[in-house]
Amino acid sequence: EVQLVQSGAEVKKPGESLKISCKGSGYSFTSYWIGWVRQMPGKGLEWMGIIYPGDSDTRYSPSFQGQVTISADKSISTAYLQWSSLKASDTAMYYCVGFGELLPTGNWFDPWGQGTLVTVSS
Amino acid sequence: QSVLTQPPSVSGAPGQRVTISCTGSSSNIGAGYDVHWYQQLPGTAPKLLIYGNSNRPSGVPDRFSGSKSGTSASLAITGLQAEDEADYYCQSYDSSLSPVFGGGTKLTVL
Image (cartoon, rainbow over all chains, first blue to last red; front, side, top):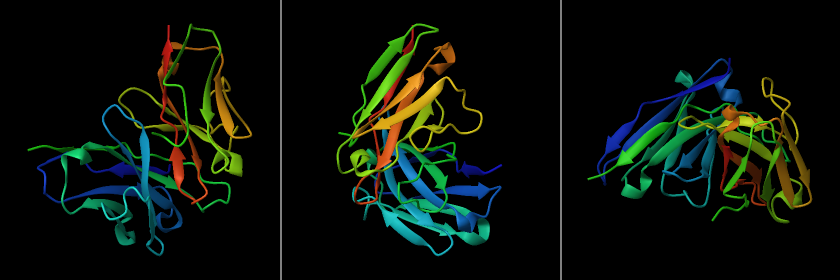
């Protein structure tokens, strides 16, 4: 079974750094794209960016470029989403998602990780 | 404001049929990109419900169906059940090859 398991909830203060993780299992980690999706409290889904662990090809949504860093360590089948200086507005649930080769008609996201809740508060 | 427009809420009685619309533009759905649908049950991660406009993943009941025409798409749910109460999101791509989501629709089963 293809599965993505994310790290646990985090509570941080503004200005602190954070790195959350997403571990893939049940498939060849280097053959699937991993994406990150944000869901702010009571709001909808927002695409943040994607990475191809096979060669670390990384693409960001313009809305998140420069705000976060997406990376992966293929030796441990894990992708990461990190912040260097958190803001209160980063408080949200973050989901990692998986998908195969990029399709010309666009990809769907499956599977989804269980989500990591990040709370930033002073 | 989301790139794809969905109604904030829809409702229906058990056994009824409901539809959820997803309206885009010539730079996303109308450009030929597929539409996919996700179901998010309360307190859980979204789950793929429909992919490639009208295809159901294994395990999704055939009560759920999707269609696409022009710059819009629709999700239909027949034989509504209490466990269908959830948030539903459509997703496509835009001309910059970025995934875009609808704002989500809350389905209430009366």
